[in-house]
Image (cartoon, rainbow, N blue to C red; front, side, top):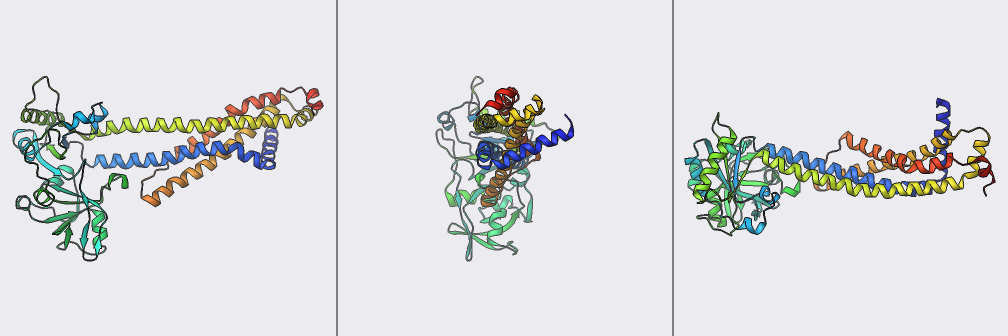
Length: 426
């Protein structure tokens, strides 16, 4: 096709769209809705996905966690009622892993997170924080969890054993209570009790307010946590949800798989499990969590594509209907053009390009609206978003494809009209 002829066809298509604004707007409405859903939801899902992966990577590739149960069990098909029958983990379990698992270098335990996590406010003079998680843990928590301190220090083994009321603040309580002020040595109140601030955790990767905020935490010795909040876990009780998380790192030169076998063996012996009985606890690693999230994110993305495809299908049917009506209304115009020498393919290209332009305009508007929704949610809730270039390409590509697929039938019909019959059409 000659360049001048293609330019003429493009100008005619654009002119037709401009003179039929209401019809064109109604035609592209379904496309706009579908592309808006694709781009908007993709930005939120991608942002959540990237932030979650960054958060998971922070735990370190070799760190091993032992929990009463986790999402791994639920994703494998286990029923919650059966998981709740598992025995709770105890500090004695953590000490046994530390003493008996020869491949383990350090062990920590944490209470106050997971199901039923305690959230409360911190106070300093006239300031207070929002509800944050108060975690009780041991002195080697930073080593096992690869935690970086921005200021001060972490509490010692002696402070843990003597139930000292000392606290290490996350970024959220630090910024809320001590903006532009050195917090070390200051006193904050957790509930009714005073705690001395001895450190501040550096910013951590997180995925917005839905996770409670990776920075929305304060760490205190687990002994002080047990005393203040009554979270004493002195013996294993089946059927009771009392979440204690054990973390361990292998010795240098020991593979994570060997360390996991040692930890599993110690825990099975402590729980009195026979060889034919499955584990009544979960072993969680970075790789396992990432595999679990891959399954969830893949299913979510497929659901998004299915839902958005319905909107695009509706929009495509609208394009076909409007273009069919347009062919009937412009039958005499088609007959006139053919009578003065227009070829069949030129008529086909004219109507096909009209459909593609309509849906492409809908795609551009959908991209703008979808991006606006994503950024609006981000600024309103601090929910992470990601707007990769390929999401825009997918939006334009989908919309143009809809125009081609649903515009081809009216275009072929228009190009196949007999010029004599077309000129007689009233």
